[in-house]
Length: 419
Figure 1 (cartoon, rainbow, N blue to C red):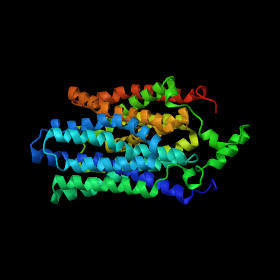
Figure 2 (cartoon, rainbow, N blue to C red; figure 1 turned 90 degrees about the vertical axis):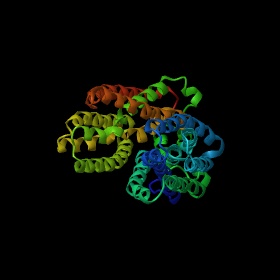
Figure 3 (tube, rainbow, N blue to C red; figure 1 turned 120 degrees about the vertical axis):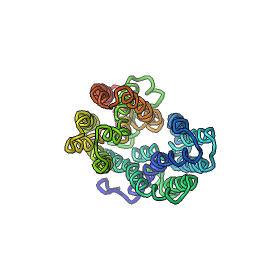
Figure 4 (spheres, rainbow, N blue to C red; figure 1 turned 180 degrees about the horizontal axis):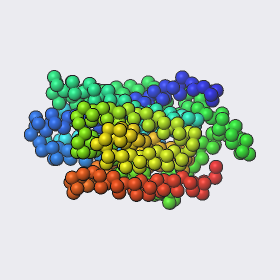
């Protein structure tokens, strides 16, 4: 294979991974549109109904390492098929729910199953198929969730005007299934060797290793690393996990950006413009982030994007002025979206590819947990102060701490295993 040219099969893997990334929008964004219709029809209190999201998130934490273990036994392809089918069944089940308990059970089932068919397999596929331009390609793939969310946000409310919430859950189930199960069956191959190919960039990696006095065997280089059992015994796992958790918790403020802008008096029309720009910036920032990683390395990229995220915290309190609000919504996504692009790359950079799937099954829970813990804290800050601004003034300290933890983990990786 010519390492300068991506083969058709590599392109197919990118497309398949993008579809898996996009599918998560039909679970997360799609469900958020149904809170009002469901609670209004069934007479549930919003707070009690929202507990099914808690079950969803909690069991999602269990799902990541569970599916990582399943992938090691049956491969990503069949793991996605099984996970996608199970998730579809549970989402369909939501359309038949009429009690809070039934919603809780279905929420737990979805949380346990969906991780195996969405972002996690997309990350693993890109890590398995690409050496060169891995960051940029991963960034492009991770825009799938934003694109899926944008398409859904534009069309789904129109569907809800003339259809019941039961029909809406069925539509979400069908869309999710289409983006996962057929894609896995017909487009996904577990690794390049299954098609008689090499990882994209393999030839250059082989030549580079030979030039450095190595064996010139890039296959062995890419298989280097440590096992999950060994990783548990290193400080690197805990440093990276802690850093990603802290940064994800701080950047979960993304869920409150519209609420903050409304609270400081931004008009409805201006708010619509700013939130649209924010959605576009979320997509663009992932591609830029991945490209920077390929050119500058994961540590330098992390420092740059977190500096931009930190800077946005100084502009958000003054976002009543349109120009400053515009700067804030353009800078913030670089910090907010880091958790979808950089942690998978950091994990590979530190622990290697030897047991990447199992290690990422653990590391992937760091951002999920941070995103679950952060919003209640931001909410509590607002309840206590009637403003999110005090949290913004404290956030830079946590951003620096989280960034330092991640940088140190990557910087000292050479002590883990011979390259």
